[in-house]
Image 1 (cartoon, rainbow, N blue to C red):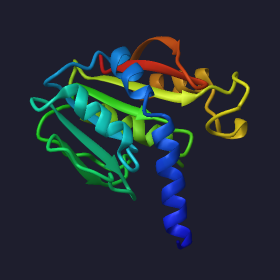
Image 2 (tube, helix red, strand yellow; image 1 turned 120 degrees about the vertical axis):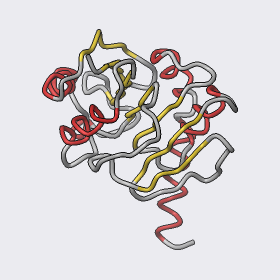
Image 3 (cartoon, one colour; image 1 turned 180 degrees about the vertical axis):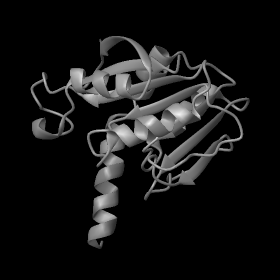
Length: 181
């Protein structure tokens, strides 16, 4: 197995370990059958596949990633190969956008959030989940790569999003649900 195949296998394995979080985040964001969902930084699509199950055949999930296509593609899952910092053209605004474990990797998280604000319709909810630097660092991103809660809230404010509280979720994550006012 070459290095790229090994790296991809390791990435898929890490994503599969987080599969259970899709249901947690979908509930926080209010995802229901028939909705349109945009999954930013979907990687191999493990969570996007879970969102596709939740929205069902009447719904649609767009999985956006600049490098990696999902390993399988249910009928209601569409892959878009692109960077979230560039304009995203969808036929209609999504009901929910997931940005999970993405911003701490991004060279310019503010550009991603500003771009996502343009994709949102007024009722669109954006759930952002990141690894919490206040947690022990036993899973997920290394402590030095984690994004502090206040830093994320400041980025959301600067991008013009409204947001409520910060929710602690499983596996050393926190989540914020934001919207375009």
